[in-house]
Image 1 (cartoon, rainbow, N blue to C red):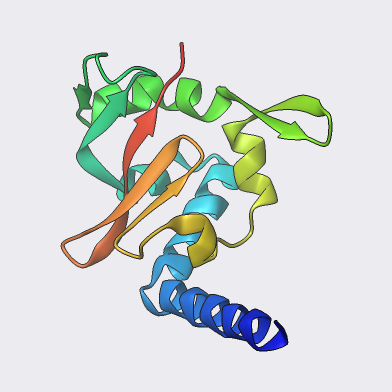
Image 2 (image 1 turned 135 degrees about the horizontal axis):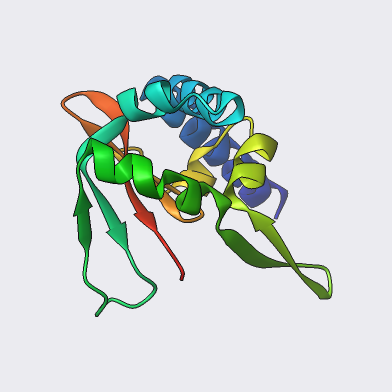
Length: 139
């Protein structure tokens, strides 16, 4: 049993290294700081256009936004409330606060290292660089 536990610890540390090596850790630090600073120019620079906005249902139409349209919807994306359980309670926090609280993302949180999902936001490698590519908006 101890050998199996040790194996999982090693695998998790290798996975965490893969995210750092993919450059996502550097991207996340920049993106997070831009959100904290409310630096919309930096956020635009870290975003891939056309940017996709999806609804809660797969049948909802996908919105494809240019930079101006993205600027108009950004505050709604970052202010949307995310509901999740903590203990026996449901807690709601805005995306902005969740980003503030998350100084780093490890692979076990991220999925594969070519795309990363953080709550309602998705990031992908585009032309060799990480970019904010998609968000889900629950309205």
